View 1 (cartoon, rainbow, N blue to C red):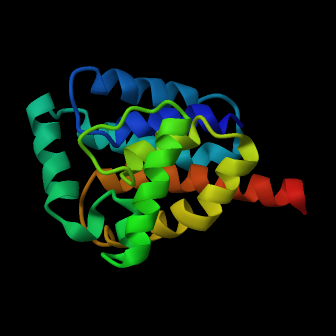
View 2: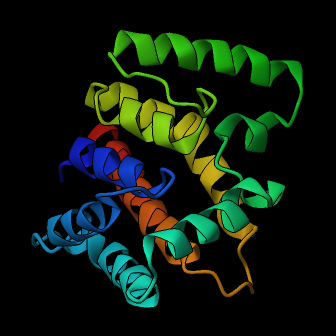
Length: 180
């Protein structure tokens, strides 16, 4: 499995929608059609996201994104917030993320350094072991909390989060199998 490629693609899908968003969606869908039995559920969730958003205009996507992630604190995409809230540890994590982004040549957007788009872009450039450790220590826990915030809400982004969660779980399991 090529985790870096998947993380880089999903980073685009969790960014604020703009021109080219549908192309990024199709690219991710095509990448997940590559035979990889561990990602069947991820492909199914991504297909559900694509199906439920098929009729949305770019303006509709922007509104959905804002309503989903920017207004609802339970579903915000800032990883550190889900791990520590506003505690000191989050500040330290933000500083570490900013350093990590610089190390990997990732330009920050208007989002904080711990935003999922930055985290996934960084994972896409990390060495395999470093990415697996980061995923196990930070991303997996935060993503579980974000997904929990979507329970019993009819929101297409839940499918996108579940698709990413499957990739993260698969990546994590592959790391454990390689070490154990």
